Length: 281
Ligand SMILES: NC(=O)c1ccc[n+]([C@@H]2O[C@H](COP(=O)([O-])OP(=O)(O)OC[C@H]3O[C@@H](n4cnc5c(N)ncnc54)[C@H](OP(=O)(O)O)[C@@H]3O)[C@@H](O)[C@H]2O)c1
Image 1 (cartoon, protein in one colour):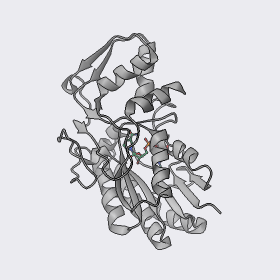
Image 2: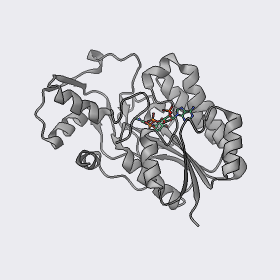
Image 3: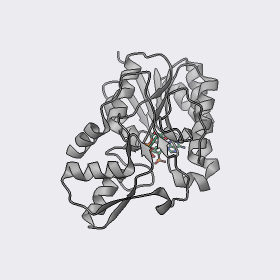
Image 4: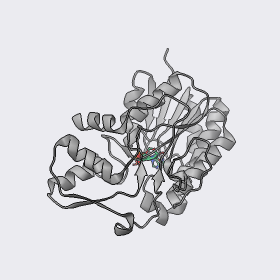
């Protein structure tokens, strides 16, 4: 009998690919309408009744600009709720897989950040995710805390029209024939949710040691490089220009070097290869 896996946030961008990656398990998928993870009583009751062998939490408050205005809500979903999940996983003595972000780091080190580097978020979203990371580590020992970055996938991200990730946004702007300006002084590792979901499955199946992991497609680029590669692969001739972040002011501070270094497990394929696959689908 295969293991009973509970996926939370199953309706999200990553959630969809996790559901596909674990589809041959005894799978239960809950969206926010099935279980609001900020309701501690409901979390305890529903998870206890289900008795899963593993919990995978892809539910989160992911709107980076929204978090500045809704700090409390962001911290409740990304922080307090993680404690509820950690507590029930601890009581049932089962592994909890939880996702976090490059934004827990200050992003000033151009060499990037290894798994045990010190965190220092620069915005409210990063702070809320850091709260969740700390609560998880304080309350449970059987956890995979997986940090990742610059996600794109076929499924929708909360608050955005279906599939409107960075790649789709660029393609849609190109279709409109507009001049496209993209920042070239913020660097990171774009990651395909399909690859992240498969790597998560491998971690769980290999029974890798519990702890913090950085799962990202490999290779560093700027948002401008990322956009350029999208148009190159698609063979689209476009009016694309690099700009500095000072010329594209956002309401929320962003890290300059969102570079997660994976020192603990098999590296994922390059971001360019993953992007080619995504664009083929
Ligand atoms: N997207 C990125 O670039 C990125 C980068 C680094 C790390 N991450 C991390 O990766 C994980 C997955 O991100 P994603 O982009 O796939 O997120 P997403 O598409 O925004 O999905 C998040 C899901 O969480 C659910 N959710 C929100 N509040 C909830 C609550 N109180 N109870 C239950 N479910 C709730 C949402 O459901 P509703 O829509 O129904 O509210 C949504 O389906 C998150 O932990 C995120 O922090 C993402």
